[in-house]
Image (tube, rainbow, N blue to C red):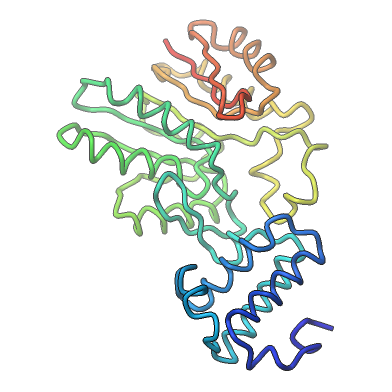
Length: 295
């Protein structure tokens, strides 16, 4: 029996009461961010900002909107991510459409974007190609392109996003169009179908979780975008082997990594890409997060 059928008064209740009902339901299922999630979902359904909820607490939403809100609350109570419920996620100051075909962009990945921009801003070449492998929603390559266009408007940059999933590429294309950025997206198993011979900078947020570490909290996100195999490094190993076979390997490779992967990936890079210098950067929590390889 749903919370709607238990309390018919929901369809005539105020914003204040709807919020209380939603928060109570989420807390009963031990959702950690119950208050924030209820606020986000109600604001989304009403097409208002959070401020509106607290400046108009006695406003009574339409019956159909309340029903939609309680349906989303019920789904959130089953640990479905808010980003999938709203099809929205902010990343690096931009808004992205997301669905179950793509991993939800995480704040930690913004460190990868910052590292890439630090290198790119020093570039003086007029023609430059940046490729994002395993692009997913396109959050990394679109964020890079958007910022580069602002800071280096006179230089000719080419942006490529590659992913093995057609569903993910559809999402990425939608996001590029919404953000008014031109990206060349292609379906490829890492670099396999890449036709551009020269990639100057390669970025990648590849699947790096060990199979045993994919918990219930992640069950709604695509396993293909999470699983790095038994040791979490299988996809990196495949990418490094592909790079080692390129006629013109990238000058700079910037990777998001798991917080316990620095050692294993450093060894892989030493063996498969010995010409690269290696650097590990920690995130704000002091955890290893980004690996940079530079010729």
